[in-house]
Image (tube, rainbow, N blue to C red; front, side, top):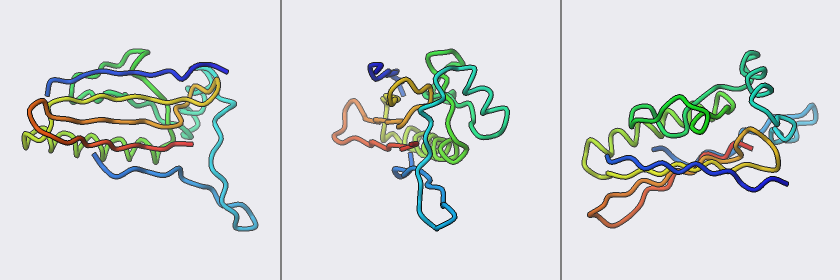
Length: 138
């Protein structure tokens, strides 16, 4: 089992936690998605080509995040929308002077290339408190 990979970037300068989107079975039972079989960038890109995954930047471009291997992940479309909502909230908080620092971490399960969670931590260097939205993917 591979160690949890993490990405931490800081920005000088969010949204509510999202639970994994379950799928309903024929009997109406809820089943969480399983991305344990997606163990490479090529496999993730193939699912993205089918519309099952979306390429996103962990650290938002709006705060200087770059489209480079350490900052690119593939997630289901609903998780990408949640990330966009979080980014919009972070922009607003930054413009209002509520935050001036952002850290983004991705957690993985096993050898999967798809993060199981995206954890954000927004703080202000001279104010108390943190804002910690989490996007649970699978």
